[in-house]
Image (cartoon, rainbow, N blue to C red):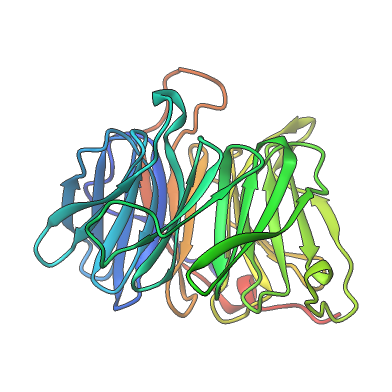
Length: 332
């Protein structure tokens, strides 16, 4: 069986791609943010760029998607909402502090009205999108800079500097840390994602490893599974960072990772098995996103400056149809 090709979308970002996410209310539409300061929406069926909007935030580092809105996080610390039908942008709030530390590096949404941001100022904020006050509804101190974040129901996980993994619960209008522990990885985590059932998290590090950790400390049943880690995104003796990690929306226990080696690999996180390695791309994989049913994977091929300033291939967003054999869990 021949493998499906990855096809490049037109009019891609012109600088480093920071985030990708499909829009749930319009499953063919893919949102992206980049260091060129614009949010984009591509139609992955009509193969067109439907929207390209400067967010007036400088480089965009983070993104979360709601029904008809995008929310972006900027290097300047601003969180802005973009209404897709009208292309109207409004300020939700701002991170405060020293200019070099205000960047909004992480964004997620708890529901259609509540967005979570975290950044380089070692704080996590919750914002009510219905409010025009510009004031967060809750603030949590983090143990370090935020490098990766995910949400599951009313629980938030943030991977920070110092190899800390911080779990935050949001209840009754207030967020509080319920668990702060050291990562099982020896080097800094770059991305983190909950298993879709909330039983654990998967972490990717700068040292070409992924860890799977469970949440027995929070009373979550792991079915007897214990934490483990494995090597990945390595070529001979060269070790590459794991930049991104995303779970398949239907298979629940399988996920894809993207690394600075230019490869995308799928894994069965429950049975500790590698599923498939996609054909190599020209440069680093900066972001990944499955569509609503996992039949397509959006892939940002975008140099992440792990080797400093140098000539590099142009930034591109690819759409790759996924085979069942590349995503389905394997038997024990």
